[in-house]
Image (cartoon, rainbow, N blue to C red; front, side):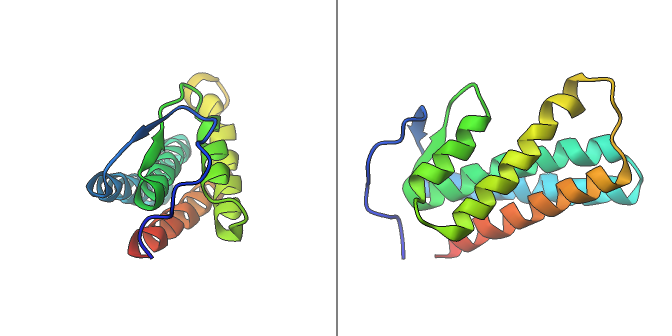
Length: 143
């Protein structure tokens, strides 16, 4: 399948990246996800959520770079959701992945900066979202 033919330029600020970098982003995503699962097993819910968020961000980078040679350089992580939707229009799996990333990003500010503590169900939900995102990025890289 390889890289897709260039379409309209995304409205999100991007930078070109090589396919080798896509593998690195996937490796980061897998590492964050593995650590998130360990944090869940140890009852460290906030740590698990934060690691799941970072796994999702890296998985999104991995997929966008593998398929299109682009990654978001926006200061706003929510722009990565928009970038996925712009780079993979009409792709149902990409839509689901972008929705999962959006759900993870909704938790990012809370887990990093607010006094609220997350619970087991929060950590389990976040790691499931991240696991699906990493699986999608793997599939894109194999294509």
